[in-house]
Length: 154
Image 1 (cartoon, rainbow, N blue to C red):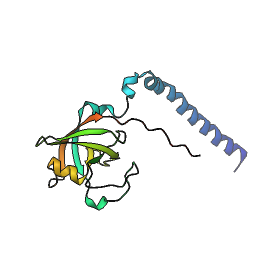
Image 2 (image 1 turned 45 degrees about the horizontal axis):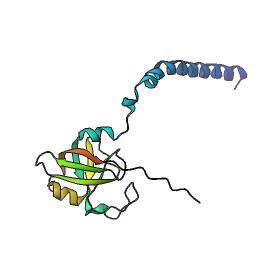
Image 3 (image 1 turned 180 degrees about the horizontal axis):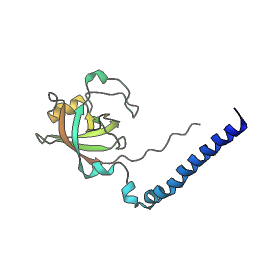
Image 4 (image 1 turned 45 degrees about the vertical axis):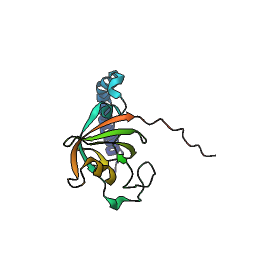
């Protein structure tokens, strides 16, 4: 490659970077100027009553580690939620039959975008959703988890 070709390449590259950089400040002020309320913690929607599709874990997941590090127990009253802190207690209500249970968030999920949570098999039975598999439900925060102090290595 000739020096001239390399310089042209460098010039084009710098010009493209300059264009990208020139556009960044125009979009940045909107994000910076946004009020703090729009950057609320992810728990805010569930506190107001998160509604949507709810499914349940099969027993094949028994013993596997959840995102919180606990072994999954299908007979425990637990659930997975995309954003609520681990340890948060929530009331889950099946909107069709109005049955509700209080569960502890100990996992992340579900992976399907249209779902608001996954519950254990025991919770599914109490909610009357064992046969249907997926129901419309409402999730309300009962008590938020208190932050745990981080474990420091000694």
